Structure formats: structure tokens, C-alpha cells
Length: 136
Image (cartoon, rainbow, N blue to C red; front, side):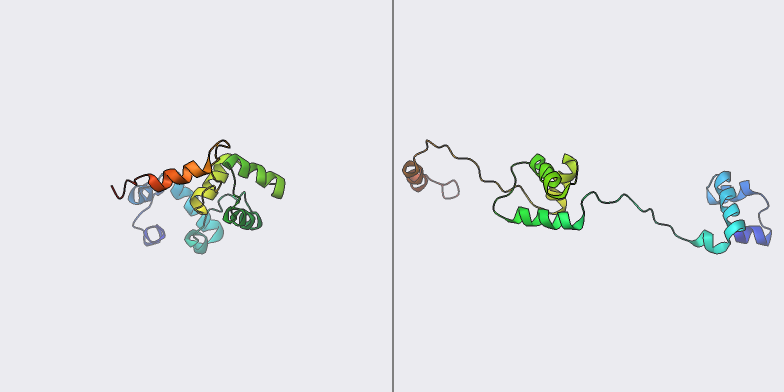
């Protein structure tokens, strides 16, 4: 853009916009930046800061440790409550789910409940005598 202006190949901002496939207002903004701050301002690559993480490193380490123990959690809602009680962080259910499931690659580790009236001897006998599908 600057080369075209300084060499005299282009005289109007509208023509620069057409050559660069940009709107005239964008070209005007670029030229104002050049006039006020120079060429270095135009060449500067800026990175969007993004949002701050809701869960700090200390809380994440504690969550990871809690998930690695055999106790685990019954639900992701319980994880949300755990964050509130242990770390004072009010996070959403979806945030807890995404962190545990996709970033930490963990699953809730709670054993299934067993019927209290179940006879253990009958259960073990059933397991011994049943035919598994892989051997059948």
C-alpha cells in the first residue's frame, strides 16, 4: 500500500482498497496509523488476549488429585459444589464437564451401588457357571 502511494502508482484510497480487497475505511484507518505511529505500528502483529481461566492452577491440581483417588465424584454437579466449598470458585456445570472430560481426560469414578438384599454366594456361583459371549 505504501509503495503504491510513494511511487505514485495509486492516487486514491478507494483504488488501494480495490487492489487489496479492503474497504476504503480500512485503508483510511491504516494511513492514519502510519501518520501517527509510523511503519512499525502497521507491521506489528497483535494477539487477542482471550478470556481469563475460571479455574486456577491450584484448584486444577487439587481436582486432578481428587479424581485420581478411588473415591471420585457422583456427578459433575458435585464437582461444581466441591469447587465452591473447597476453593471458593463459582463455575458452571459445562465448565466442570469440559475440564474433567476433555482436558483432564478423566471420568467420574464412583462404583455402582449394589442391592443390599443380594446374596453374594449366588452372585459368585452365577459368575462361575455363566458362559461368556467371547468364548461362546
